[in-house]
Structure formats: structure tokens, C-alpha cells
Length: 518
Image 1: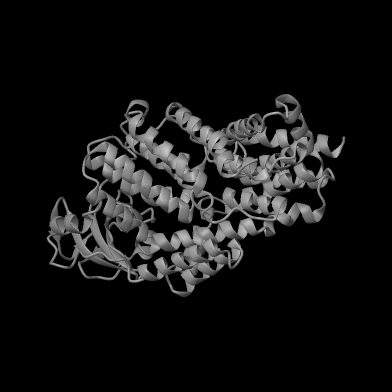
Image 2: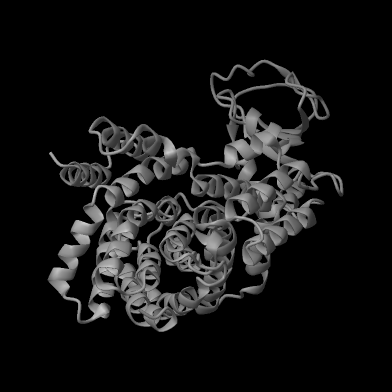
């Protein structure tokens, strides 16, 4: 078989296995890279090049920066401000939530912004007596629109910027994406605000969580604590655990003020059937109020011998004010944005500097930095980069480009733009938008070379269309994140997703060529 035929076979098999969704995406991506090496399409250097690509460094560093913003309390603070000021009008709340997640996404990526704001949005829904299903899909979809505002919004933007630089000698600027992103965000807001109530489900869900924003006051009243004793801060917190039947702690003697066996927690109070106890022997059903660092609380409450009442991480996210390192985190973010906007250093270097600064300034620990990185995402991108290389080097891109040009003709570049946009949107519902961009970007460049037009509008159309992953809960991790808390079913996404895809296609086909002419 020819290299083109082998590349097409690997491409089709990858798409089928991605859609089948029975094999981990990281394994599929590595399998793609290995298949291209074994069949001789790619060299050894091309096969492993993805793991050293600047895009990988950029993505990993952004995960750490996003963790710094969350660990310092900045994302929680932003959510708290929204919950206090949003009022009870649904349209106002949807507008504010969408704008907030769009801004956060532009700075720290879709997944980080959505994960940070889900608890706050659930609280908002509970306060206005709306099911979370009315607010969580808008949260995820607005994040997709926000990813088009800045280079840092999604790894796809950096990929497209690098491809544009290779093809034309000039990358897409840090804030240049907003020329297409702002119209897409405006259209998204209009659809979410006016069509959302009619097209979103009203599902009751048990996974929505609880409002923990006043948790310190709740604990003070429940345990009759002294003033100031229930105070929570960024370093230490309180959480309750119940002693279940057959727990290893049954029969142990405890009393308020004692230090637990681990040496990391203090027993603040003990209750049995609503009555505060002093020194007592633990029995099934007893409740302990524990104080310690948030890390110690999370580690010790994962013990099978206790049942945690409220997850310590959920308490911290909803009830704790800004930490003393918030200004350090904000300064690091501002510095990274400045480096990215001015282009003084490559994007991956700017993100690396910011990630290291978060650790050196003790905004995050080394362990937190390691945990924040989504290795599945990195492996997916690194494994699919060789496929993008093969599509370009084997001649597959030229073959597909020629086929599209023959089908649509050369007379109207708008038809070619529409064709590449529709292909991107369809693939983006089946596989990740990053994998889609890696596949379609070289084809877009080949079409531009074949027809003699600028590749930039085609590449920007790929960027916009790749963000339009709205039809299924598995199209992006953000869509999946809101599925449980919102109680969504598989078919709940496409109803609101279809009009949004229409908005993004209009931006890709009509707005993009006005800003970046053919």
C-alpha cells in the first residue's frame, strides 16, 4: 500500500475507535503514532516528535497556571462575587455566568474554567430555585465560545497559530483570535439567554451538591462553637465525618481538643444523636468535627472507616475567601498575558515561566502542580501530532484538498471555506477538537496552496469550527463535566447545540474572510 493509503486507513480506524469510545483516548493516540511508524509512513523522529512539541509544553504549563488561580482562591472569589450580585433573574444570571466563564477560559483553558465554576453555578441554581440543568450546559457552551478570545483559550489556537506561521511566516496574534471570538461569543450569549429556557431540560438531580457558602456559620450553630472557632481560611478548614457500622474506630476513646492518630487533625467536637459529648467511646453513627489543613482533611476523610458529610474540597471552593497569595497568582497571570500579547518570547516559554513562578511563589506546591496536569490530554495531543505530520508529508492532505476543490470548484473560496468548516464541525462532534484540528489544518493549507488563496482564513475557520463541539456530552471534557451535576441525558445537548453550531458556522464562513481576506 502507498503511504497515502496507509495514512487514510490509520485515520479512518482512529476515528472509528474514538467514536466507539471503548478504548482510552490516550491509548488510541499512541496506537496511531505507533501504527504510522510500523507501516513506515513516519520515521522514528516523526513518531516521537509530538512529545517534545511546544504545544505539549504550553498545555502542561497552562494546567499549572490554572491550578494556581484556583488554589489562591481567585476563581472561587470570582464565583462568589457572581453569586452575591447576580440576583434572581435567570437571564441576568446566564449572561453573567457566560461572561465569567468566557473570560476565565480565555486565560486558563476550557476545562479549568468549567471545573472551577461548576460548584458556584450549582449554588446559583439552588438559590433561584432552578434545576442545575438550566445553567450547566450554558456554562460549558459559553466556555467553548470564550476559548476563541485569546491564544491561551485552547491548545487549538496555539496549533493554528504555529501552522499559520509555517505557512505564511506570521503567527496569529495573542488577542487576534478575539476578532472572530467576540462575534461568536455574542451569538452564543443571545442563543443561551433567549433560546436556553425553551431548549434546556428541567431535570431534577441528586448530584447537584449543596450550598456551602455559609458553611462556617452552619457549623458554629450546629456545634455551639465559640466565636471565631469555626473560621475557615485557605490553609485550614473544618469537615464532619460519621462513624459507619463496622468502622475500625468503633470503641476508640475521643474527646474535643485531641489530636488524631495521624497527627494532622484535631477533634473539635463530638456529637451523638444531636448531643455534644466530652470524652466518649465511639459508636456507630457518632459525628466528629475535624480541623486541619485542607490537604490533611482530604487525605484522612478518604478513609473507609469514616463517611465524610461534605467533601473538604467542595467546602474550600465555596466558602473560603482569597488567600494571601492571591496577588502573587494574579501578578503571575498578568505577566504571562503580557509575554503572550507582546510576543517577546515563544508562548510555551511564557507559560513555563508562569508555571514555575506559581511554584516558586508558593501559590501551588510541586505536588499540586503535578496533580493539576491532565496527562490524558497531553498524551492525546502528542500521539495525534504524528498523524497530522503523516497527513501532510505523505501527500494525503493534497489528495483530500484536490478532492474538495474538484467537488466544490475554485470559483468561490467561500464554498471551500464552508466545506472545510462543515468537515471540522462534523469531526469535532466525534473526536476531540484538538485531534480534529490536527487532522484538518494540513488539509486547509493544502487547499490554499492548490487554489492560490491565503491559508489564514481557512485556518481561522478551522479554529472557530473546532470550538463548535456542542451536540454530544462526549465531544469535549467540559461537556462531560456538567453531565452528572446537571442530570443530563445524551440527547439533551443537541437541542441547544444545533443553533449554536449555526452561529459558529456563520462566523467561520461570513465573518472570518472579512477580517482575514482570501
